[in-house]
Image 1 (spheres, rainbow, N blue to C red):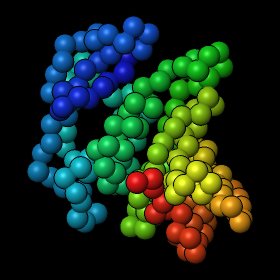
Image 2 (image 1 turned 90 degrees about the vertical axis):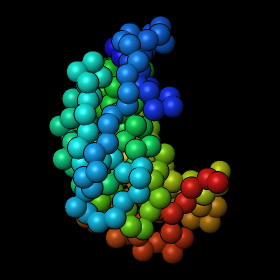
Image 3 (image 1 turned 60 degrees about the vertical axis):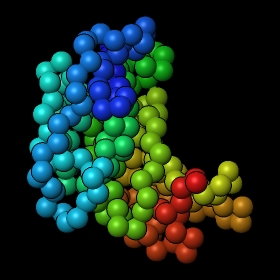
Amino acid sequence: MALITTTHGISTLRDFAADTPVAASMPALSVSSTMPSSGTVSENTVPVRTTVSPRTALPSSIGVSWGTIIQSAISRTLFNRLVRLASAPDGWHGPGSRALRQTSISNFLEFWKLIRADAVEPELALAPDGILYAEWVRSPNQRLDAKFSDNKIFYGVITPRSVLEGADTRDVVAPILKSHALKPLQWHRS
């Protein structure tokens, strides 16, 4: 299985096991001047039109989510993280571990569209069950963790004085986290 890595604007397809290039280096996704209709975006926002070489085809879970990715106006950095996580095959963490589920990506991206005006982009991780995790961290003992299952978000805001946990749909969870007094969606390590 392969992984696309980007260094100084050059994308390279690499073999997971050997960490060696399996295809020639090629320019990263090309950017057109077309911007998402969702309003203003930074130069790091994933463009509406890109060109992908057949040798660097995106993982299927990303391809299926492409329309939602564009609408969510995520940064290139976050997009690259999603592609890296989606490139992990079944068995990536031993027997029984699963590749990233497309439904988990979609749930995260739809949630992101609801909170992006009030949030910084989180750190992302892939759980062995194929579920996407997001984490916003203020300090070692203050964080927001969110697990994006097929149709629910399991979340926890953990601080030294309290723990707020729950599970519900993104339409319920987004306003809870946006209105939280500590603004955990804006936490990030500096």
